Length: 153
Image (cartoon, rainbow, N blue to C red; front, top):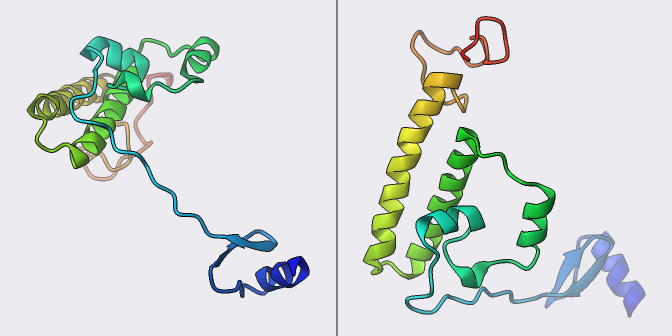
């Protein structure tokens, strides 16, 4: 039986009810993600950005280890990354908890802070992405970068 299933996988012909893995067929799974309960405990805004999550229930066991091995520099860019992460997480939470007005207000506040921070960062260091519209047409990577002679300090 195993030889038949292995050969079937090699030919991209797994039997009904089986899915393809590299080199063989296997039983298909039905993954799920449990939904958070209503009004879960939350970190305050500052702690949420430091922890990388708004919700203590989502702290991952390896998070503390990662923070000790790879401490993030407290820079404008790392703050933008933290805000973008929080915006994504809050948006995912709001998909299943759209009535949570406190989180919705925080979501819009983080978007505002990220927009302001991105504008300050780009004014000092240059564009963050190639899709940033610059005056004079397409100039991605043509202006001096902060570490280049003539770049922003």
